[in-house]
Length: 221
Image 1 (cartoon, rainbow, N blue to C red):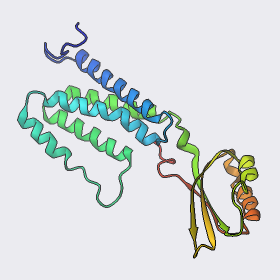
Image 2: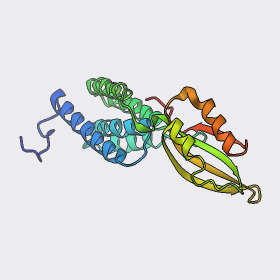
Image 3: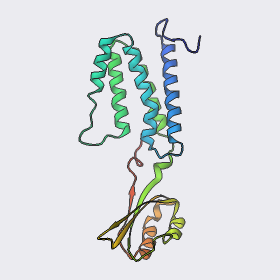
């Protein structure tokens, strides 16, 4: 078979659909890992980049050659809106997967709809076990008085309790009498958070300190 020929020229079969689906997943994997390289991505977004090409591939397979079906599909997917609450990548993928399965059955491709659903669900379940570096990342907010030279003031404590720490944001507040520092950290041991905060309080004059989970970091796909 010519590498650049249309695999559906002689009609569609289970084998050709699986080949097309496998290529879509491979392309999604390639894009996901390139996106992840030296860049912070959540597990949910990482998995979404892999599953979405499969959903799009299945829709196009059904729509191919039918203008009317294409318009109907475009109208159906345009209904996906998240106006009130920001949607997670996992939510968007789940809706695309279920809509694609429904469209497959409605177009008469019942076998493809069932097969696609099994493949998509298998991908989601397998990707739930993939570890992403941002799963343990947290944001540390430290308030310091203006007379404290915060450069390097917390390095010793951060080195003791965190495996990674980066100062990402500095902001003055309260008419310039206070500074708010934001660090991106990974705790060595989650059970030491209280001791960690207590040691930071000694150095920042017992001002406000907070540790937050990064958005999406606690998600599980």
